[in-house]
Amino acid sequence: MTLTHSELLQLKRWNTPSVFNGWEQISKHDRRTGFNLEETKDFMPHMGVMVGYAVTVVCEPSNPDHQTRNPNAQVEYREYIASIPGPKIVVVQDLDKPYAYGSYWGEVGANMHRSLGCVGTITDGAIRDLDEMNNAGFKAIASKMCIGHAYSWPVRWNCEVEVFGTTIKPGQLIHADKHGFLVIPEEDQAGLLDATRFMDKNECDTVITSGRNTAGIEMNALLQGMKEAGNQFGAAAQAQFGRKGEW
Image 1: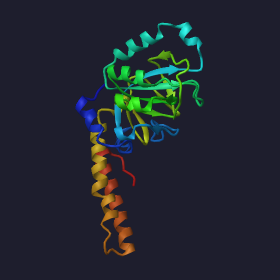
Image 2: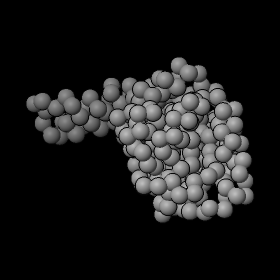
Image 3: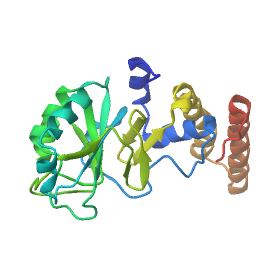
């Protein structure tokens, strides 16, 4: 975990697409990767951005055998969660997907995980007790809601999981909001805040301004101004990162 609490707070000032714009300038990874490939639903958009480090767990609410096989799993899983510094985002892979026999989350789970330093969850399964989870201040990005919990029990944890078409490993930094989530590789964390800040300012100073200051401008002149602003935007990104920003 390479970022300070202050830096994490500053990253929350931008939405996830803006952070992606900064990330793609400094990363050697393919810009088609690192975020959800399937649609997510933010059930607490009013809570804004969620930033934290991944703690992972796999569940299968339809299967009653897991509790019998490992009756101590719940205790061991909570000890794992407690051992990791926060802020943490609980990433839950639900093996029942696309069905929702039961939810891993609810009022009790949200409050317990909040007390263990978790700020929210990303799950490709379901949630329930929506109002109570809100009251706990526990953000949820999930696929749907459901009524019951069935046989929800930790199957395995502190492991690689796949949610919404994306692989997430324990300890990876996640930035998430109503648009979806972005998983930041460790080697890209240190420069992420500065890159995000730069690209946001660059947009505001160039291409966005060219599209707003249009009063009394003839159409061809407007298009030429947008072209020049785009070139200016790309040149600024090229000078800063050695990679031409695209607009």
